[in-house]
Length: 318
Picture 1 (cartoon, one colour):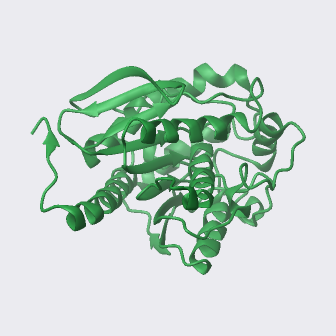
Picture 2 (spheres, one colour; picture 1 turned 120 degrees about the vertical axis):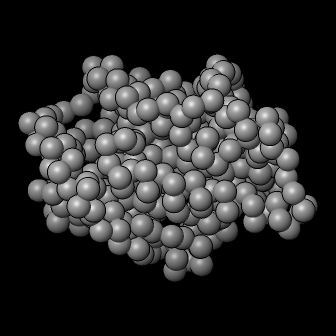
Picture 3 (cartoon, rainbow, N blue to C red; picture 1 turned 60 degrees about the vertical axis):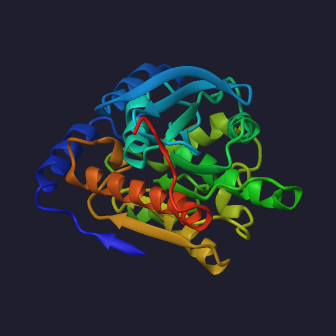
């Protein structure tokens, strides 16, 4: 685990964000909050020269994000967050595009079904279908990225694919997750130790999301809570999380269990930072640093196999 200290440059911006957010802390969030949430996520600055194409992969609608210069043989699957109730593929285009551009890779963002209209296991079923759709279209070198609930879906997807590896399933080369929600049973100690520090979430808000998604089903089901899944056979994973969030323990415990199972896992904890702070590019220096580190990790995962297979990998648009 690496601790990233709060920089003097970010301290005033974090304090201002905290003051603005505290007035709404603890307010229940349901489907009526979707327009507000989408507008907030869509405010991430767009990366230059990334073409957006509506598409369907594996039967799941979504968007391709295609940087002007991209690896010819690699793909990224980006799974958005929003507590399984909020968020959309369209809203996260700019944020996902920032990572796709840095990695120089075409990325597909699936529009997975949301609760309460479509309860568990709709979201994870759609994530699996989108991934398998990429493989069916010929993709063999894939990395997966997700934030918040999308981070939980990413990690659940890894365990599902690893369990099917004996059947010839193509595994991702690596995965990067930001503030992943790994335990819908809400048992992490940070619900207490970070209750005051978190400027956005409370246990009650997240319990509301879990109730809408699970609708009475077991919160420890591994497909809902990857903290309780099997870890053997997983590809390398990078986890970035803020120190000031009630979901901190979801990252720490997942990393501990993955490491104990022999998974190559890297955990980076950012002091003073809130949930999925990376989407605040242009506001926090830490957001830029974290997104760059995530992109470096993904490039390294793609390059590791490329270096073993061939002396060079062509870039589209180069």
